[in-house]
Length: 266
Image (cartoon, rainbow, N blue to C red; front, side, top):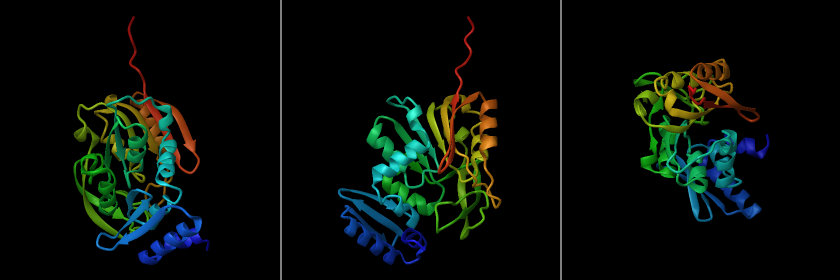
C-alpha cells in the first residue's frame, strides 16, 4: 500500500497528523496538521492561514496548498465559463469544507456565497472555515422535513440516498430551494449532492427561472448501485429552459448548464 493510501485509511488521527507533519518537514513546506480531539476535526495551517477538515482524505487535499485545492474545485465546476459581477449569489449545495467559498473570497470577493452542508461533522468544519453567516446545516431536498441521512465517517460521501457503505443513520432537517430562495436571483447553483441531484432540482422547480447557471456533479454516486445522475439532470434542466454549455468527465463527471435567454418578440 502506498503512503497516501495508508494515510487515507489510518484510524489513529494523532498518528495521521504526525505523518503529515513529518512529510511537510521533509518537503520543507509550511503545512502543519493538528488533531482536535474535542471536536474530532483537524486544524491545518499553512503559514498564516488555517482551515479545518473533518476526515483524513480532506486533509490530504490540502497538501499542495489551500489555493490549489480551491482552484481545482473552481476548475472542476467550470467557473471560468461564467461571467461574475459584484453582488452575484453563488449557492453551494454540498459545501463540504468550503473550498469553493475560499476560491470566491480570494478571486471574486464581491460575489456573495451561501453553502449548504447536511453532514454535522463536515458542517463543524465548514462553519469555522467560512463563518456562520455563509452556511446552513441543512440538506436540500424535494420536500421540507426531517429525513434519514446516511453518514460515512471515513469519507466525505454521506447522502440522503442509501450508499454502498455508511457508518450510521441520523435524522437531518431538509429544505427546498423553492423555500430557501423564493424570489432571489442566483447566478450559480453548484450542485454536489452525492447522488441526490434529482431531488434537489425537483425542489427548485418553481425558481429555476431565477437561476442563471447550474454546475452539477453527476457521476456514479447515487445509491447502492452507484448510478450516474447525468441523464436526469441534463434532461430535466433542458426541459426547464436550460442549455448544456459544457461537460467534463475527467476526475469528476460534471455538467454546466445555462438558462436560455427568453425569446424577444419583434
